[in-house]
Length: 132
Image (tube, rainbow, N blue to C red; front, side, top):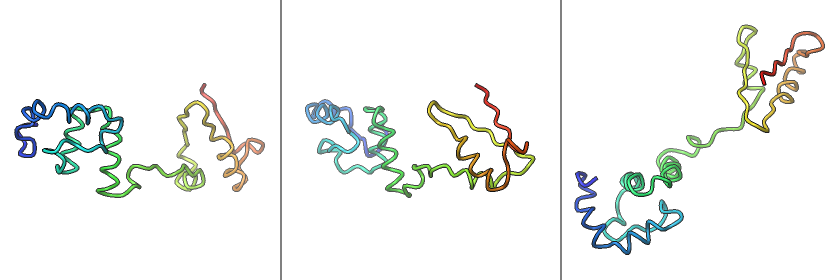
């Protein structure tokens, strides 16, 4: 990092201001804590570099804030799944597969949308296959 102009003399500063750096390093949310004096005005991008080097555990949170500030929240927040929208993107030649996590069951949503189009297991137009 010292090869970057924003971090020239960084290692020496770590030694000289070790108490301030220790305080910052000990913060639960270092990504939003005040940096030592010499680095308090670095850019948000350079702050990410610093976190990557010294507190990689806080990088994910810092990246989320960086993306929200630089772009929009829609780039980190996934919209809720809408089965009706997914159904409109399918055809009879395009099956829908769900990879599920414990506690997730899309079956009621699938059956609700299917019922609107007279698709059910009773009339043979709907097949629910559980792989596991």
